[in-house]
Length: 176
Image (tube, rainbow, N blue to C red):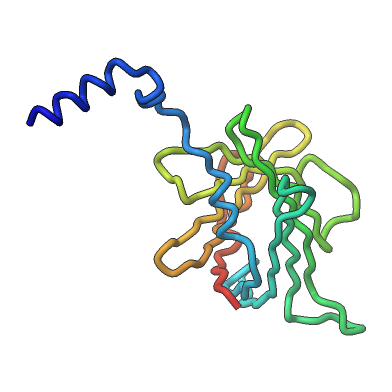
């Protein structure tokens, strides 16, 4: 008992040994779970689909790059869908950012291709990306949810018009 009292007294007296105030947890390790090769399957725009997805850290561990390719092909043998997605984390703003470039756009960089996701303590394994148009109106949401038990990801997508959500897609990514 005397040893416990002495240890407590030493901890109180030593400012280095005291715990720092709680800060928001660093959510960056969540992105580590995204790294690897995946099979994406589920429904997008009302159609069953399967894609290959690869994810890796790039540019000095500053961004995660995802390369998504549909298994479905169009004339000429090209994938029906292809995307390059870049995700980063801004610790100052405490939010994730996402640049989504895909084969469905007209090759222009638009505000609707950039999403932001605030970190929440309520859903520490979720990255709820919100995409807005040039007027600042939410047009699309894509929430990435990591399931630690199965080591898989779920993407839940919705189109948004006049603040009303309409489901667009729901897919699961499992390790290849």
